[in-house]
Image 1: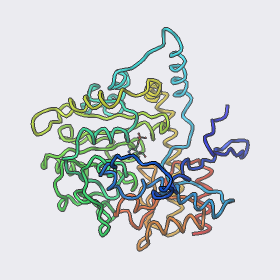
Image 2 (image 1 turned 120 degrees about the vertical axis):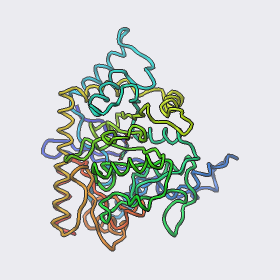
Image 3 (image 1 turned 180 degrees about the vertical axis):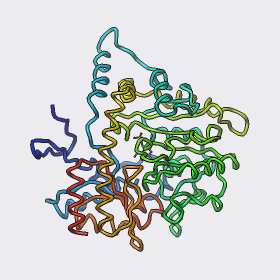
Image 4 (image 1 turned 90 degrees about the vertical axis):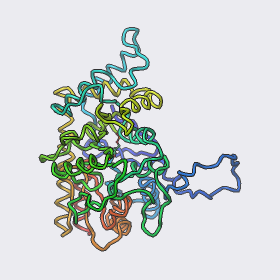
Length: 447
Ligand SMILES: Cc1ncc(COP(=O)(O)O)c(C=O)c1O
């Protein structure tokens, strides 16, 4: 059976194997500028959300897709290699999809049919997540909230926090924290001079500070978004760094929202969870995901841990409010996806998904070796499937364009993740091996 194709995707046969060449889905629309066609459209009298007015430009990846489309118009015969968006490419192991298929078939039977599930997630899955990822760390099953992905939970957490909290983000950062902060109303205007939003504390993380913010110059905020292993820099914070972060949050009475979506990619002894750090249960929420563990980017499954020792200033437990948000704004993850999650965490399922992780990390190694051999300084790629390449003195978008023009390879300009990413590009290891090898050959030939 071949995989279904969507939209403009093309199928190509190489060595008897089919590769789906994915075309960006909505790029045509994205090239439309907001004022196009206004003479002919009917406008309502509804005023646009002022917070959305504040959002700068397009979301990063649609902007890249639009530029890719322009490139395709210029070079219609180019074989573009996409090492931009961090989406998984390898098929989900059969042991996992069989479980989902069996569960789905059961839904067609009187005995197997089930409707809504618990909003917080399947009991067995919550237990399995607590045991698999937080063994010995004191995380209780009831503190695990199963979700339809970490990105969705970032938005639900913003709803929990509201517009009156102050926020700090790493710079560079995964755009969902910043954009959702703007949308909920935590940020001020975007300042063109600094390329930063007002009222947001940017914690610069670069080679100069070993990708960990200088906390002595970081202002106190209510919330600190922190991602490790980091997207985009690929840096996994050390135990010593995270200990300093937890102490800083405790001293300031802040809450850390810790994103561990890439924890299974850690190869050294860096902590895989913030709860490995003493005191974190009283100051940290952790969000995570099956997306990059098991290729579930399209299946959609994740989780959030809210410890019952985490309180607001008025002694109300945060977990109570998060439970309310989950029950009001989310009706539980798909039962089929949860059956897949349970299969991932079975001993054989976990072995199977970890072999996918190893595959992507081998890709990362090839990319690191390639850029290093070109004399470039490269970060990441050891504890994360992202390679962060430094082009000192160059603008990221210029490097992005130069690589695209010379090699037809899509990367991500580091500045798209915040001003601290200027001078870098991010290259993803989520790709088929043949594409990585071809990209490596082109980079060595043309850069
Ligand atoms: C750091 C980080 N967090 C969250 C997500 C989104 O995860 P999910 O697919 O579970 O929504 C991503 C996706 O790339 C990510 O890089």
